[in-house]
Each structure stands twice: as structure tokens, then as C-alpha cells.
Amino acid sequence: MAQDIFSILIAEDDKDDIYLLKSLLDEYFPHWYYQFITTGEAVLTYLARRNATYPFADILLLDIHLPRLNGLQVLEKIRETPTYDSLAVVGYSTIEDYQTMELFMKLGGNAYINKSNTQEGIKSMLDKLPGLIEWINQPLAKNKEY
Image 1 (cartoon, rainbow, N blue to C red):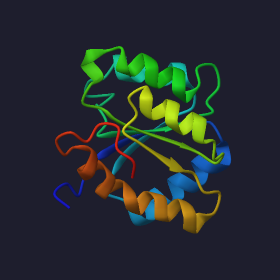
Image 2: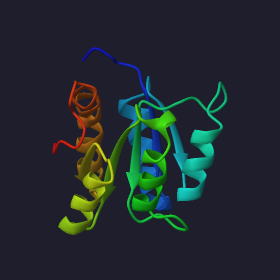
Image 3: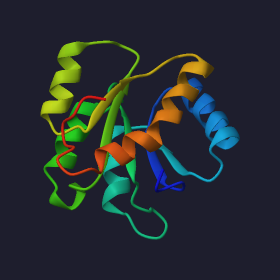
């Protein structure tokens, strides 16, 4: 992989999932910069403030079922802002709802993955992110399925 160190912005509101993700990121991916955000509104605020304190992420892992603004609403706002065109947005959810997945992709999502609720499943998801980022950044990679 061309980029071994990258930053990931994780929009997740479930405290158990955050704890598990943090544990796995710290153990298996200590060289990654990551930031957790727990609401859709906070994602947009973070992106608007990006600077040395709030660095721009290589990828946004966006839970579809966030409070206040859900993941679809957040994605829509992100794609309305040209400044964020280069931000790779990957939606994820434990619920396999193909209509939601299709809508996510139509709104400008780069990929959609199923969120596991097991340690092994989440580790597998994290293992895929570097390749997914590389794949998304290829020319004409918008709206591909992974």
C-alpha cells in the first residue's frame, strides 16, 4: 500500500462500538490517526473547522444511524460542499438495508460496508480500509461497489 499512515474520521454513536474500534485501532493500527465523532452535526462542524487541531481526514467512516442528522443527511451536506469533494466517505451499518445502501451511493458515497458486532468482524473491516482508500482514490472511482 502506498500510504501506510493515514487519518480516519469515524462517525459512531454506539459507546460499545467506539470502545471496540479504539481498542482494535490502538492494537493493530497504532500509526493511524483517528478521531471519533458521535453525531451527524458534529461531523459537519469538525469538517468546517479543519486545521492543525482538526486535520482533514483521508476517509470518513460514517455510521448511517447517527442521532440528530443521520448518515444520509450528513453525506448529502458533505457532497453539497465542493471543499469536501476529495473526502472519501464510506457508509456502514449493522442493518443490511439495500435501499439505504443504494441511496447512500446515489448521494455520493464512495463505498458501503456492513458493520460487524464482533471483534473479528470489526478487525476485518479495519484491515480492508487501506486498500479501500487506495481503490477510492483511483480515477473514476466514485460510486463503485467494494
